[in-house]
Length: 111
Image (tube, rainbow, N blue to C red; front, side, top):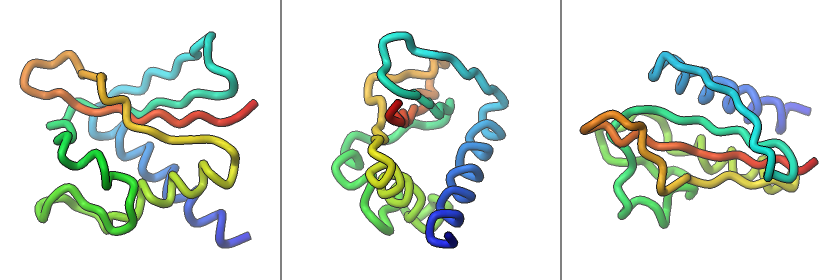
């Protein structure tokens, strides 16, 4: 129905935007993951730890210079909960580029 299709289309846009921003797409399989693990990474400026607690809240944005409405991660989390999965920020991720820590979100879908 339309309630699910729009967020899924938005999630597809968000993931394609991440690939455009980094210019890389490296799908891989984690053998110790029960279900499907999808990671979306970038090599941007990272996310300040002070933003972690509210990251998945509706209308939450990472400052006034950040584009977007602040609804994307909230929608992703809601979709994951409905499907029995989860989404989280990999807090220990680093892009490997000096001065550009980046960030990585992980989505786990049940088998």
